[in-house]
Image (cartoon, rainbow, N blue to C red; front, side, top):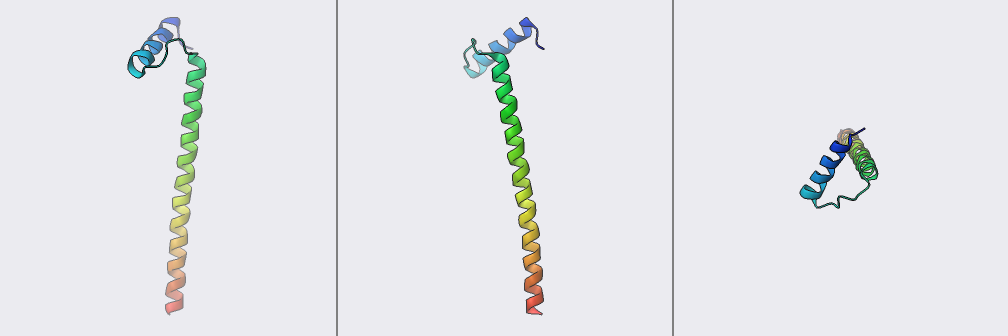
Length: 70
């Protein structure tokens, strides 16, 4: 948990640095940031899996082409 002073400091940074209203619900805002971060991590993981699967498919296709060519 953040102290009252730490919360004020965070709100000042958000307001001055990012132009976000100081009257925001900080807990809600931080929760949404965390959810977004988790969603981004999930998307990155899926992209990495797709890239890996694509590489495997290309290798197998190359092998099939070599077998057909004899």
